[in-house]
Image 1 (spheres, one colour):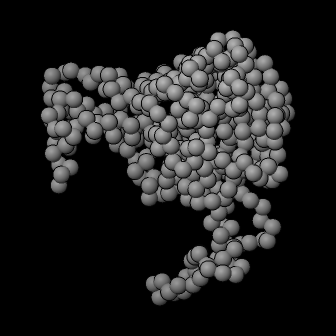
Image 2 (cartoon, rainbow, N blue to C red; image 1 turned 90 degrees about the vertical axis):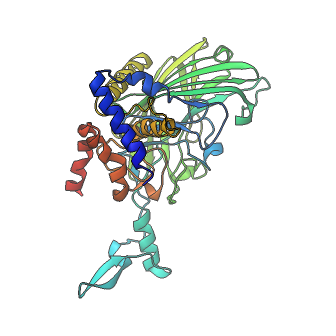
Image 3 (cartoon, rainbow, N blue to C red; image 1 turned 30 degrees about the horizontal axis):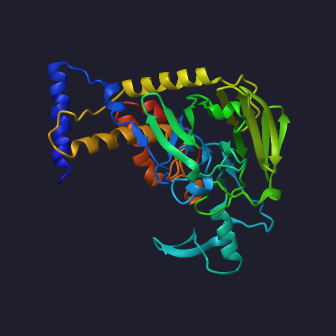
Amino acid sequence: MSFIRPLLEVCIICYCSRVSAQPIDRQALVRRHTVHNTRPDPLSSLSVGNGGFAFTVDVTGLQSFPDDYATGIPLITESQWGWHSFPDTAGYSLEESFRNYLFNGQQRPYAIQWKEGRAQKAADYCRQNPHRLPLGNIGFDILKKDGSMATLSDLSDIRQDLDMWTGCIHSHFKVEGVPVEVFTYCHPRQDAISIRVFSPLLREGRLRLRVRLPYPTGDWADNGNQWTKTRLHRSALIRPAVIEHILDTTHYYISLAGSFTTIKETARHYYTVQPRKSGSFKCTIRFSLAQDRRPIPPFAATAAASARGWAAFWNKGGIVDLSGSTDPRAPELERRVITSLYLTRIQCAGNQPPQETGLTGNSWYGRPHLEMYWWHAAHFALWGRPELLEKSMDWFRRA
């Protein structure tokens, strides 16, 4: 019954707020829970997103060191539309995995995990496909003075903040004493991220943007860093700033716009974006299932749209301010409320029920977990934001 006291305090605080007619300062409430990172930590990855698309970053504000983060919260770009299946060269069917069980007096077929033979292979294939697809890795290539590539251990003076009021990840770090500052946003209505970078390394040509395309592993958890299967998929620059990625029957597009001079494929599925030699660099990277001919929103437009969208989210519906509580647990309870609202908004508010790990990571092959969907999305309606829940309700009719 330990939950009763905090809940009673919430009710008392809300009641007193109504009586005194003192509105909650929502901006101050959200911003006192700004997330801070001061060192690399695979369990402290941060994400931005718009409900059906999410982008998870390391301490550089991008996905610069995916292999270092693969054992924690991986650096993945995922969308609700990004699905892939491996070719079925053996012609498996779901029925091959069935076994009959007595249920309500009748023999009923259920798909099970067989231990051997063709039934096992059929069950494994159907369990594995379709799976959610890590769409691409967007990171920095940072050259040191000796020409070698900087590693995660070469970063120092790390300061990174996630401002949940505007949806901005603001990252600072140094390489060999040279500062780098990065702002990262997600567009609220397009599956796109925008960045702005300030660093003397840009003038020296030692800081570049990188687009790297993995191949899915098909494992229960895909960390988006399968780089070795290069011959199993195709990619190409079909226009000066549009990359097409083809994996079996799945293909999608990555479009870029910003203050860069060239995009080159420097290795198979590895594209280098060369910024102009100035003190700052802006770029928007958009992912789409079909070729999108709309203009790519620039950084300023994405940042402004993100700030407006998040202000609208936080200013509508229910909110809890526990600053008046004397219970020592109140600050942590309040923090969990705010961060949970943020995390579910960025990845559980699309037109499909989310997977268990949302769009931050890839578990259970990226399939929706309907028992977890209750925790991920029902609160939108309970807290007065029913339109965020309604978007995914039609999935049940389709399914």
